[in-house]
Image 1: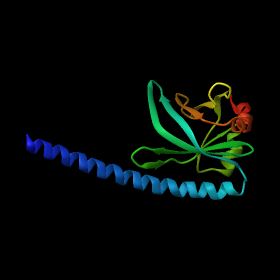
Image 2: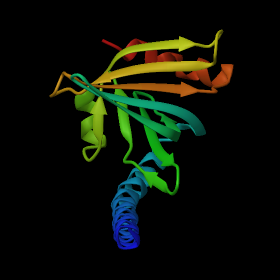
Image 3: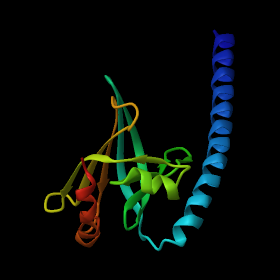
Image 4: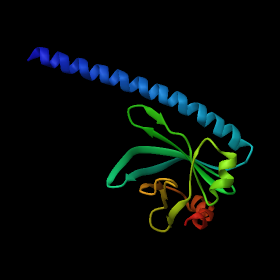
Length: 169
């Protein structure tokens, strides 16, 4: 019985080490993309909202994946919105920015290394909760959907984000 516990403990230890190394290398790769994006975004003078609470769900056909403990920074440009997401649980996991726009081809010319989506549906709940719901579908794989809810926004921030409502399908 004790040997089984030692083997189980060793397996958990090895798994945790592999997981930590994966997160470190993933964050390093993502950090280079984030640095490139931020350097490029500075020249375009976006409106920046920092440390916004985020609910991020993905739906791939019949399978739904919930990503808890998310925060993001928003970069509102003239013709697109960039969401720079990070997940904070045991450690911090960084994700490459995703862009929302009404004109994918124009935005692809500027940010050709990022995923770009045209929102399907945008709903503001500024009176109820100060939330903005955004539903995206992958331009290639239409069954892959992303449901993003930005939470805890002030009325001023929601008013600034109102221009993205016209970008939906």
